[in-house]
Length: 301
Ligand code: HMG
Ligand code: MG
Image (tube, rainbow, N blue to C red; front, side, top):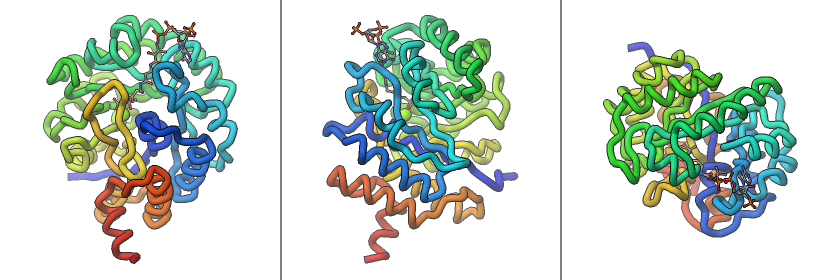
């Protein structure tokens, strides 16, 4: 078994995490969270999304947050852009990377972005072309790669189809997402194998929500396949407003603890990361949703 010696984690907490909060989170708090994540050594942060404020009010301050962050050399800042309107707004704030997000499930596509899978690809095509012409890297996400809140189990063939369509319009990287956290390791392996039909190992990442407590196991099986890029969320924040009942992404702290314990480098300072998670959890008046963070905070006191 050969495991990667280094792993890149993209912290999606400011976006996937905070998009789902009931209470408004001021832009200044989001900016401070991004600052703390980069200080902890994160090399990529998903900052916000340029989606409709009617659909996701929590991300309405996208431009303000992007203008407020103090960029650190070597750190990449990504944003979600579902259509040209979103891209045109996003490009003004100079993201390093944009994310077009589709789904392997027809009903989730309709509920999340109000169009079919085919229509979503038609909407993404000009976004991808414009981003690439502007030298902005394009990541794609396939939601519901294993299971859907509306359709149930999702076959790997669906992932293969969306990966092929995304590849066809020039999407450079494929994030395989278990939106509702129902996946188990062998199902993840099959979804990854489906994406690998169209994307290189180096251009695939895993995005695992932890609803059923399977995300670390799903990360491990992906590592065993050679996948070395993952989206994680500080303090386990996260969820999608259009995937009811789904909890947050796997906590960055838990993944870092596991990887460091396996001798795999991340470039992340776990103590500083725990502080970042405590900062946002204190603001939200709850405890970090991370076993590793809880253990380390208990040990400190
Ligand atoms: P729509 O209503 O079909 O859009 O929404 P439309 O083109 O018909 O436009 C309707 C109105 O929205 C118009 O305004 C547009 O200007 C406006 P009006 O004339 O009525 O005043 N509009 C926009 N405003 C701001 N930014 C935009 C934009 N586009 C249109 N980009 C749309 C389509 C995609 C916009 C909508 O469905 C939407 O915003 N959905 C957001 C979904 C979302 O953010 N979900 C959460 C993120 S995805 C996720 O969490 C999954 C992920 O983590 C991976 C995983 O876990 O699976 C990535
Ligand atoms: Mg997500």
